[in-house]
Length: 445
Image 1 (cartoon, one colour):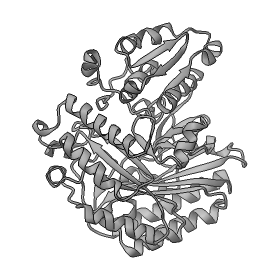
Image 2 (cartoon, one colour):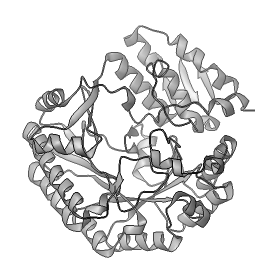
Image 3 (cartoon, one colour):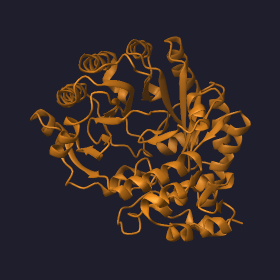
């Protein structure tokens, strides 16, 4: 029986794509401090670059991203010019460091179109060393993948495309305002592969309005026909206080918590049966995928793009709301396009908040990362440096032990397979900010 955790899974906790998490960033870490951190980066450091494009042609009702719908070309073109300026501002401080990873997110980054995508990559190539580029990924809306776009993505050496499929049932698509039948997704995958982009990720969601367990299973089965290298299966986060457009979703047709758990479990069982290896909380990869190899060799990482093989020394975030990670801490650009635009247009970095990491932050971040990635963590490897025994945290995990979701062997925490869906809740035991915070998060499962 999981009675205790069927109720505790309603607890709101972060997704732990960073630690501390973004709600705890402060204005004390701004553009000036970010500039000083960039100035002292060693030339030998490798960079991972994330470019955020906060525009979509149409806004989906479930969306939790920093984005807005635009119908005209002018705002997109103006934004691309700001990205060019920001690349120049960063490069002026870092020099021509090598970039090993590039990731485009949004929004719908393909809204830039072939020419602007080429222009921005050319700008990166002009200022930085792209000869060591290993992974170049982009998030795509299958409804807007065209042959010219696929050709442009191949030209700029994109190696991986993630397609937002979510659910393939007509009634669910209508409830979330995103109509994209299977043949549309299939066509998008075909165009990308014809262009030479073989590595395809499929993103699915559970907990959507009007969605059943059968809808989830049908979507997994249909999506598998496309032979994606990876799946990501995310729980819908209903946060209308943060994303007002979600108020258009009738809360009465959202699946209750037990059904959400059943949906996640059904997707997990199906994907395991189809030969995909579970990666952390919500990713699944083919046996031969680099993500699976990273898991087996202890090199799996987690960042703002989810589970990754990205081992770069520094993450540079470009664009409105983009978050960067440096040895000293995290930084975030102005989330509003107006604030971001004014800063970059005036020749200033757009950082408006962040956090400088303490030794305790770094220690807890490593523990949370190990749990989220490897489902195990030996606290003894941290206890000596921290001069502590983690008695409070271990006590907080006792209900999970009682429910058979994890076991504690001395100071080693081992999450059982049945505990995988509860990883966020388990990791939260080591979050020293959570209980004192007024930040609101999505439910844990």
